[in-house]
Length: 468
View 1 (cartoon, helix red, strand yellow):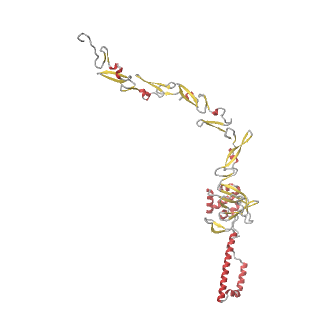
View 2: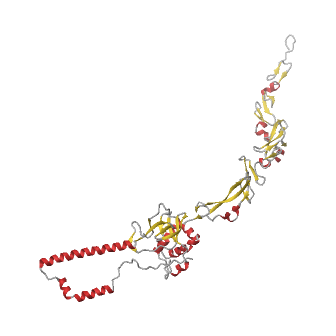
View 3: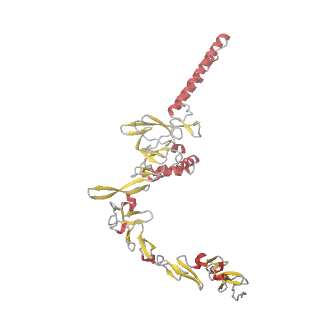
């Protein structure tokens, strides 16, 4: 109260007002605290504290919903209240807010299995997957619509990922399933194709009628035209009826001959190409009685694949594995090898050629020389051997003649008695006896030309090949 008796009011320190009305700082803009904070004033200072479910220093408060959605499900809304956090699933989702489930998770939301389910504007939306047709609640593949383009008897299948379909004929039929399904004749006994061939069914179209016929194609490890498919030489020799006996003889002989064993191993491994002349259906009994020599067998083999052709191999000479020359001629009846007719020529194998001949090749004398660059013995023909012997004899006669001339010249110059003349006068009986002895007992040549050799390919008495 002042001197005039008037009353003066003023707010206490820290309070705001005209004295008649005084407010704490908390009553003015919450004392500077966050709207989600409580303000308290004491001892002339303001204290701010975040309310329940809010986090901060009171001046800045953040809802727990801002941190990991307050613990609510990702498909739920979070609301922080003084009483706690309230979680509510979004429209269309089911759950308590802490766990919410889309209707698309349960039975695809009622959509078809080939449809995609989604939530749009709080409602389930179903759309058929690419390649399928329908409303989403019902979806159909192309195969379910009139079997697509497949034949009625074919099965249609659709690949959604590849966006493609295929038509498959029933198990007893073959074809593309779109234009034809015909009887699969390859299912029984490989369609009649040989063991070394693959069987397939080719189309035969006669007007509106489509049928199938067997087509045989040789596999990779075989050669031929499909009707005949041969493997390697040994396999072919064993399979053909006409060559089976020679095959057995070859294997039997190789068990006792290292040279033949190495040759057989090379044929098995397919090393290089070889041509073999096989005697026609030789009797196995003849071979079991006598041992066929290694040279006689190897004489039927030639290095390289020789495909007999009348234009290329007429009057041509081949060389066998033992070095013997084999002359090839083409006559009216066909090919001849060393005068022996070729019954069937040019049988293919993967590692060479087989020719079937009427009878075995004759084995000429084998010299002790070796083939240049190899270990095989060189076989010379009888003609060549005789020529060599004649050459030696002629050379010997020339040397003797020279010696006689030299002796005659020396005798005339020296005046000595002619020893030869003396022998002629005194020893006539001796030379006469020697001459008769020479005529009665001619000396045999060291040559084996014309000498008989043991060849079991022939009958010993008739000198003819024995056929089965």
